[in-house]
Length: 232
Image 1 (cartoon, rainbow, N blue to C red):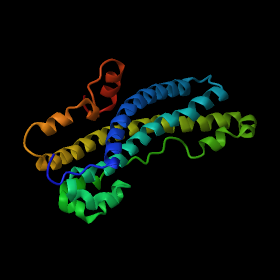
Image 2: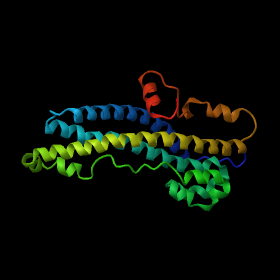
Image 3: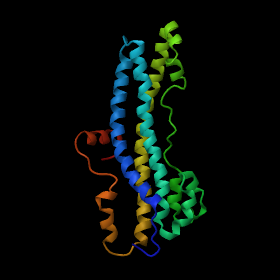
Image 4: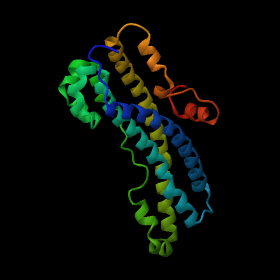
């Protein structure tokens, strides 16, 4: 604790949300990995029927979108957490909690921590296209598939290729987010640590299981993280 310490319900909700989203992200990465492998197999099968290829190509982008959605949620929750890390001094930042963009527009943030302000202005970009824009228009057009089956197959394969290539971009986004989040958390730890009273109380609090966002994993989840994250 420290003089001027301030925690509120939005902070607690977002902090626990980050922990939950981190755990779900690991599972989503595993599902995405399996989905992309299956899509690659379907695209490589020259004898794949239109219905079989349609299902693989239509559903694969959902796995990528889920990962991107979790990454966006983490960025949103970080914007909610940050004001409380500065205690009472961070109260002016409340009005920027709706997004990182709104938070960085609050002038008091730069005065509190210019390095953090610079980091938050350059979050990983997550606006990635995971399929052809016209995929679902084409694939749901039964008349098109019946009249021009070869053209429909070609369009599906093209969109499937877009999705496979997008998976690599999502992998890069996950790695970038981890590196960015490490840097942001380092600044927040410094902000809290510089204000906290001396002693082991703060360290003990951070060591509690309820606040642990990332744990060392064993089994299949560890191999998934090793493949996707910058370091494990």
